[in-house]
Length: 300
Ligand SMILES: NC(=O)c1ccc[n+]([C@@H]2O[C@H](COP(=O)([O-])OP(=O)(O)OC[C@H]3O[C@@H](n4cnc5c(N)ncnc54)[C@H](OP(=O)(O)O)[C@@H]3O)[C@@H](O)[C@H]2O)c1
Image (cartoon, rainbow, N blue to C red; front, side, top):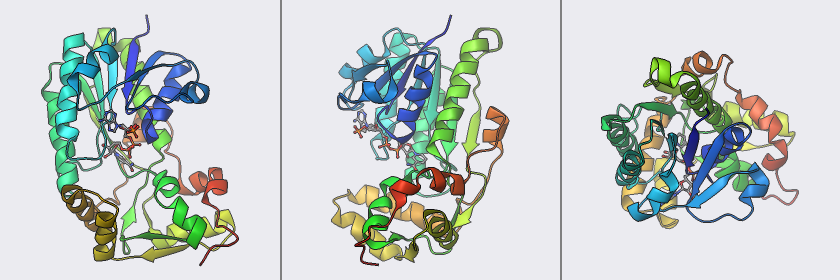
């Protein structure tokens, strides 16, 4: 019998895609922060439940009857406490397997953000529930959400990466990896135990941002520039947008590590897990060229 699967962060970049894929053949429940009345239309027949990771009283309903759960929490210092709330709710509900979405090099590079991720991983691994850890690098989808608006209005993306290379991964591949782990555990979990590995998930190539700009320019067919804004300017802009000082420090340190090539690693774990190579950046741009266009009235 197939298991009942809960995906938290179900409205987020990787969570949405996991729910969409699982809905095609498994019993899936999506835990969302706010009700989204359009979600059913987007992903098909899914049982959505409203939760707040900071309020344990909202979590028991979400975990009721669940066999396996994917734990995705936001990029905030609260992620450790939130993960603890989720793990405790999973334990109360008798969940049999957890899949945690963490970050590449958690605890060994990248500063406080990745220290929070490592602490959250430890909360998961210290539980009696068998757990698989996925550690993806930055998502290609950030080019749509973070840089898409400036590409549209300025024909440029602004980021403090210098010449640093990053092996961006498509968030759909993160979802593919999670679904593979979940369905495999579903199929042979009882006989062989759950897969308690850590998977480092990266794209197939690590690219510097001037090469990314060249790919965008060629594939979209409009000039798109990379502007290295420098570390200080990027951190000031983050503060101006109202981010907490703790988050500003964490993201600034992560960017500095990225600038120094610490997230250029390419790993073979995705291909080993799924049997195919991860999607490349150029294919990603081709599929999203319409969303990465420059406005005819752009101030370039
Ligand atoms: N983006 C990347 O490049 C990347 C790469 C590797 C790892 N990660 C990791 O993946 C995780 C998610 O990041 P993301 O970029 O995918 O963010 P995201 O798309 O915004 O996903 C976060 C999800 O958590 C939900 N959420 C936030 N606060 C909540 C709360 N208090 N209670 C219940 N749900 C809540 C959000 O819902 P609402 O939006 O409705 O609040 C959203 O669905 C982070 O831990 C991040 O470090 C991200």
